Structures are given as structure tokens and as C-alpha cells.
Image 1: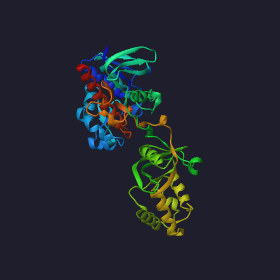
Image 2: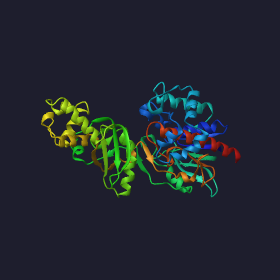
Image 3: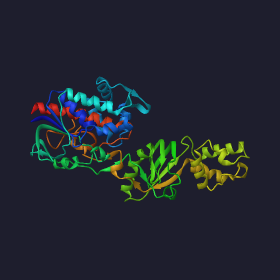
Image 4: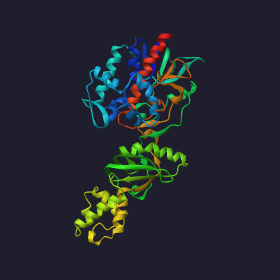
Length: 421
């Protein structure tokens, strides 16, 4: 008999096990894979972006999927507590752009090892290679778990930290959703977020722009009336199947939601490669550069404005021969080029599947979770944390912050619950 069983050895499960064991409870962590912390070790490109140092308001803004829910858990354990936690375990951290926090060593493995050592010190028992088949429960409480092997373990409290459906090679294959439903929970529609987009535009199909990365451009998603739903100004990438890169990943969930509304119609995206300018100010700039050097070919006059490959592509779209000089170019053509540079539009037809996404949208409904404790409102003794919940953020340390915060709160609450039973 254990006090607390935690299912799942990802960031939230590891944190939950430490929080529960540090309250003198007998803790068992069950992981279906052969190793703990797989998602932690590949996060942040193998460097592990452990949290984000921005103020809470900003963090919530960067978690468009129910970020407001985190106000309560944050009052118990927040991003500054995450930083103190890791530094207390001997992992020195440094701050990079946009508040992202990384280990000074740039090694995600160091973050994972520090957590493993702390679990060992606190006496957390770990069971690897042990997929859970179901939660054991009566009408009025959770009592334990049954493994696929038939083995059963009982506990006073259970924390489900099994992740979503994104990045399945780390073991998050959606196992926890049916358990949650069995316990009386609603699981909202699952969909990919932070995911590359697909397009059937001729220039994508012909791979004309494959591998072209645009730096610091403003990428917008439009609804079917042409209204901007969201704009992200960051880098982006053209691929052989469509679009990727940070700006596109952040826009992806808005594409998914818009396609749901329009029964799967293609969605229009707009790219402004001169985010400081609009069509008129870009026209004035192009015109001035051209007038300053009327004898030079426009492709050379304007080469400071965009990468050559992108510039030549847009000149073609605007119907301009790149070898023409400024003196030979009509002003309506210059206007057409200004429009391409500031509002290039294309259609996207969908996203890569959820298995290719970085983050799962949807999950266990947060309306049925007690935010101060992460306890189930449906089944006493049951707690949820991490990506199985219907909470999702942009990449940049926001999802792992949500996982570690909810994991800590779930672990400490499960321990307190077990003490009362």
C-alpha cells in the first residue's frame, strides 16, 4: 500500500513525485517506458528550457489554451519557485531572450539527473517498463492501479501525469484520456498545436521556396471574412509540405480552430516581410530607393529589403522583370511589389497530425479540476497535472512551466490528501 502513486515519468510526474515524497509520504512512480524524463531530455532542443521568467500576466498571455486557470496553482508554486527548486538541486540557470531559462551547462540531461537524484534521496520508488491498464476505483474514491501485466498497486491518492498525444516517441500516446472519462471527467476535443502547416499552393508543391527561412516577419491568420485572428512576428520557414518555424507554430492552433468553424475550408495566411511598414510606406520606400539609383536593376536596388530568393519570388508575383531599371518601372508595378512585401497571402489546407505536434490542444476539462490543489472534482483521491489537462501554451518554456507548476501542486495536494485518509 502506497500513500501516493504517480503515473507518468515526464516533467510533471517527476515534479509531483518529489513534491509528494518531500511531505514524508510513501510514493511510487510508474512509467511505461524504459527511461524516465524522455520529454524533459529532448525539450528546448536538448538544452531544456526549464521555465520562463516573465511576469505571470505575460506567461498567461503565452498560454492561449486556458492559461488563466494557472493563476491559482501559481499562488502555491510559481516560475520563480521552479528556478529556486533547480538551483537548490545544484543546477545553475541562465536567462536568455524572452525570459527563457536554461541550465548554464546547456544540457537537459543535467536537469533530469538532478530530479532523479532528488527522487532517490527522498525514497521515491520507481517502476519502469510498466504500462498502466486502468485506474482502480469504487463509486466514491480511487483505490489504485492495474498494470497491463495484471499486477495491482493500491494507494490513498493517485496523480495522473501521462501527457497528451503530441511527441508520442516519448511515451505520450493519450493513455490517460479513457481513465479520466471512466472517473467521470469530460475530455475536450484533442487537436494539434505548435504544429507545422500544410499547403497546396503551386509554389509549395513545386518546392520553389523549400528551405527558405524568413527572419522576423509578421505572420497572420485570417478568418473567412478576411479579418486578422492573430499575428506573430518571429522567424518562419517554407518547407516541402507547407510552412514551419516559430511564427507558424504559434499561428497553427488558430488555423485549426478556423478550419473547425468552416468545415475544413482552406485558411488564408498573410506574411509581412517588412513588419514596420504598411503598403503605402513600403511603396514610398521602394520608390525612393529606385529614384536614388534610376540606372540600376531593381533587384539590386531593393536587395537590402529581403533575401534574394524571396525578393525574386515576390518580383515575379508582382509581374516585374528583375533586370528592369528604376527608370523603366511604372509606379503601379512598384505598388504591386509593396503589396507583396507587406501582405503576401497564401492558403493553408491543414496541419501535420497531432503526433507531429509539439503540444496537444484539448484534454481533461479544467472545469472539473480544483485549481488550488489539482484535485478531481469527480473522484476523491484523484489528481491531474501536465499536458493531459486542457491547457496549452506556445513553445518558449510555457508548457513546461505549466507542467512543473501543476505537477508540484498535484504532488503536494495528493500527499496532504493521503495524510487525511
